Image (cartoon, rainbow, N blue to C red; front, side, top):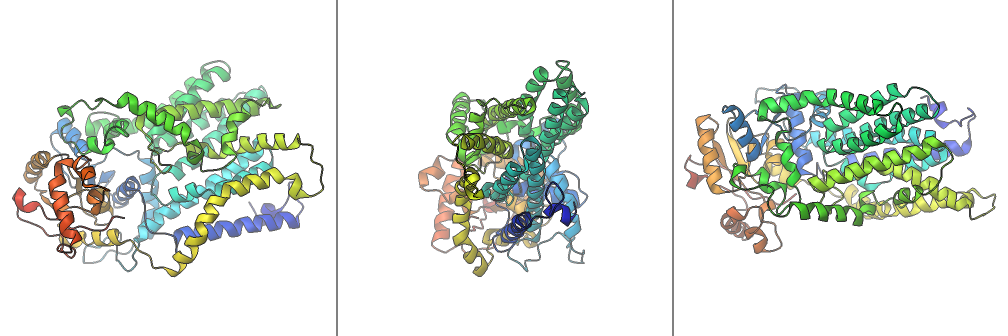
Length: 583
């Protein structure tokens, strides 16, 4: 698209009002990108995002889909399947592959030159308090967000008109949740990009069906993007189930489109399932156990267990977890939809008889996909946090916002307000934007001067990066924050096992492989609880005596400057701690 066409109207004439509005939009884009990548950036914010980042770096190094974060459960699966495993160079079976693969390509463009000190170009030089590749990965997410806004604008303009498309794009740009997700390292912005493309082709298929033309080409393209979406996050399979149900009843001949979708989808995801089966013995890998998220102490308890046979993983609480999560999604729907005021109006728009049949049909497809996603999130867990890795509601924000704006426009027109003032004529859109973007603006106002005048700070990450200088690459660090050790410390790290006995068992295994456990790195993540009872009965309950005693030593300063050292090989001397402030 040329600059002239960007600023021109549909008739090709340049309009001063169009020029001003779109110039302001571009300035807003540039300003937000600068803030969230420069003074407002403090490093990647989510453990699973950091975990995917270190996998991307291993791919960029040419090591394949290896991970430096070892979950005891994944280790158990691999050991039971092949009997010949190694912790250094361990193959990940937890994450979907697409986000790390894409990030790995981008990381290669920013790596430095290798040197004689073992720096392969990906090592943190510590000249900045924020790791360069944190910023690179966040930048990729921001670009995907902006691309998603562009695709959504084209789609919504095609469904309704350019005015609703423009307001939808503006609300997406000023949705704080999107920008916060772009800093996590999670694949949500990639998912939004793929979902936007998939739904664009889906709408083209519905249009073709309405006009009496064959929709199969667009159906195949839609299924292809949904297959890629599943490779970005396995939970995206659930909205696809909703899409299949809609397609089976809507497209003619009945069932043909759904069958084609299923075939294309399976062709895309099956190769990775075969790969997981070759590594772990199951096509679902260890990601299957994420279904226990939200139960008891959550997914963490299961992932840190080296012997899942010792208890029934579907112990008491699974049914109640599903029920509580389902109710929680309804209660928190406004926040899950980015706090955009008009997005929940989508559900009221289901009652409106839209004149164009493709618009009326498309909303039922959106509902079917959303309900499928709700089922998946209820099964796999969605805590009362809109920034959870399992958050799929955000995929539906653009389309639900568009339908909500269209419904609001119908109601506004029925008020019969006659005026030549654009502000009054479009008053409903102005109010929608005002109430939707106020939370983000009110949050940015105090943060902008603080970010511009404050120093970058990422103390924990910076301290953990020194582990690389103290631990041999052939050894493994045991930690309660293995994702940080793997990414910032660039050393293999075993997630602190559920019990000391399991750690002894793993230690014996690693000694035989010549990859000994070098020590225990315990951050304040394990000890930073409101009450001591939360440590005693929480995820690290088996390690509570050690955690409490070392946290108390840290609080009085006796361990504040204690370096992470490499102890002797006896288990008693391996309890060396290096405590850092929580991120």
